[in-house]
Length: 598
Image (tube, rainbow, N blue to C red; front, side):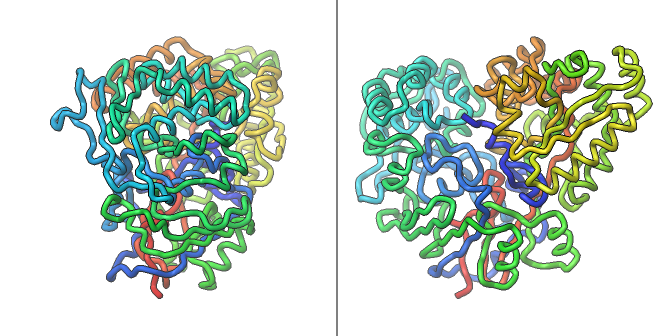
């Protein structure tokens, strides 16, 4: 599986820029520049035309395996969760505290929905939340949807979220992952065993109860993920994420799929069995949405500029284009702050290259000191699109403050550390990057120059995809086929989301590829314990300081060089598109919010 994609698709700095995935945004956590176009009275009707590029197409059309920004855009059109995030037309962003979606209300201790000291959550499904065939969505549908995340064909990319949150789920998950990857084997396992998970039960068709082994401050955030969507019983007939399932996707959201040509075109029309009275967060103003996703990045921007298309689907203006649009004060340019670290410089802490140079903390610290932040930001498009980042957690994430920088730019210090580590003449390392991204290529060249000044000699190795072929392959990591690389990552939700960085990326062997996204096999017992401590915190307020301690410990060990907390640029047809509300998870505006000038 490829959990890395949630944080690193060929996108954020653009196929023509750099690499990223998870996101960007003012969504709740930062400000937006020239962002909202919500003036006037919303109009219903019309067709929203969205354009994208094939390289950033969906990785999963199946909610069970969704862990990528483009997947999430699909999900929000056709899927609902128990809870979701509020959309705010006034700020043009999403909120960070979940609100009710298919559930009647968010459980709290005050309303009796959270009991047993914070370890039992009870939800009730709204009447009128229906599948496109008119049948009511039930509590069993949600249990079935969550049970499918462990399938062995296309599982969710961060299974630990579920395995640690629900009593008995880890055992159930292990059993599902062990079955054959056939529709019959997976379907029978889920059907016959999902009722055995003691931490999930459906006392009746509209009631859903979760039991947690301990209070978790971010359990509602986990339930707001796309993979927590309901699933009808018919899904068990098909292999997860298969063409057969794609042909039988069921919607309980505002739109249904009317055309599905993967990698080419997706069309959507209104779901006549969706009721606006049950969905406070998706006004669904437009009647139809057409998505063309096999274009070049340049063609997308040209058509939007010409007024023949309305919004991007899975691409963005390049840094050069963004700066040009900003200088022209183009109202179609939208720039938002994000919760991403994208890209960063990953180090292979187990590489045998140059007598195991990167296995030594002092050598890794030398790399930290040798990177010039000013050069990095310039290579990535300048301050319009970047905030400098010197730690693991961006400041918008709980635990990301106060900001700190253990390694201010210092070439002399870098050389000193290399000498102390036994490399007075420097070290030789390989930097692998995705060659299709001109932004990453430019950054790789910049880093080669900067590191070279400190006698860190870097050989550049272009690859079709450094994710698929190198940095998520445990064998080539241990062999030292790569030493340095340039992935990106974004939080799975904003605010109380440090878990979504720390657990997949730095939590010891359990996070190594391919089970996680710890690309360079970083493993430190102190860090592992600090992460465990933070996960036990019952509230965001108590978790924050613990996550900060883990952040500091990781940076002392220096397995990565954080480079930038990027801003996200998007481009719309400002003459037609109104109510552009940005969401980090999409790296774009939410199509269910948009209304059009007819």
